[in-house]
Image 1 (cartoon, helix red, strand yellow):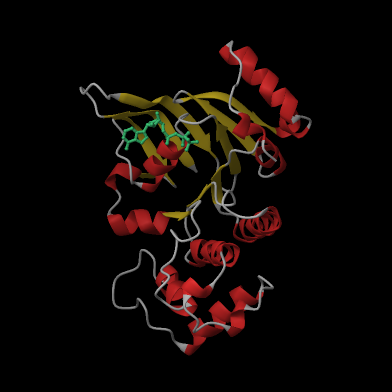
Image 2: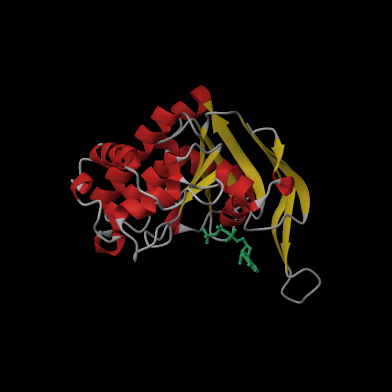
Length: 264
Ligand SMILES: Nc1ncnc2c1ncn2[C@@H]1O[C@H](COP(=O)(O)OP(=O)(O)OP(=O)(O)O)[C@@H](O)[C@H]1O
């Protein structure tokens, strides 16, 4: 379970550029739930993910990940607990290393040093198996440099990397936004598959309301650093993109002027 309570993040506190990015976010995500997170530009989505990943220090509030106070987790502990796939396909892996070296690093994430990059034959077999499931032929390219892969192939490998070592929380940060539509669809179906297989608790940020409703169990909308909408179950199943827009307007008493939200 993930529990976020009274989370506030203020950037540049006390300066003329002070920005209250999160203004008291409360969110409890039961183990295994897949939550899509939506919101207009600057709503605080990346700040929320950054706080969960440990990149952003909360100003106030608490975060618990699988029963542990996130503030007390060591760097290794946090790396073990939280896996992340970024929007930029180049961000989640190292282009200069081979595919199998990247997978070995991911496999060793959060473990003590020493086991790191060694690619034993049993590990190579595991990597080959996981890559084969992608259906992209990458199981025959273990020794190719990661930099040789296309953005979509790289994002698919990033997803495998994120789920090789068992994490308590998977963060997907607009991970299909930089891909062409066909590859985005492929990576999204792969996402569904790995989440289904591992049962990992997942938060997926997306700019697409369609994607937010079509995938996962629950949709949360952020606006100006607060949760303004939280739907699941039958209410969500029967919900259309237009309903989301309507609810957003009703709750905030204002028009949603971010066309990007309608994409997809
Ligand atoms: N490191 C930072 N320093 C100062 N302000 C920041 C920092 N990071 C984010 N902000 C500000 O905090 C607010 C929330 O930003 P955040 O990136 O979390 O929004 P977002 O919902 O992810 O937006 P987008 O969809 O545009 O990526 C914005 O006003 C942003 O400019």
